[in-house]
Amino acid sequence: MGAVRRTKTKRRTRDYDQVRADVENPKHLSQYKATKDPEDLPGLGRHYCVECAKWFESDYNLVAHRKGKNHKRRLRLLKEEPHSQKLAEAAVGLGTDNGVRSQENDEMAMDN
Image (cartoon, rainbow, N blue to C red; front, side, top):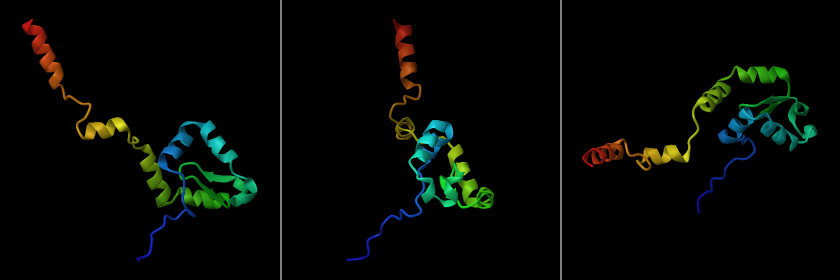
């Protein structure tokens, strides 16, 4: 049998929906930070990038990170509207009548 590809969890960061909740609601972010023990975090948990959900050893590293390509890409992705079930249904044509039903109803009302 071939090698099994495993997801790497060592460098895994929080997903976009979790980060979006952190940005929109400070309570959500404080609850997440409360689950972490400061002694186990880099820089005792003082230097944290909210958008990327990463901890840094020093303020210098955090500032350098914020100037980088990966951070800017993440900011761009967070500005986009998140996917929803309503958007998915509209993409395949469910839940939208494109005005056809309203025109038919208007014609029927005029005939009566």
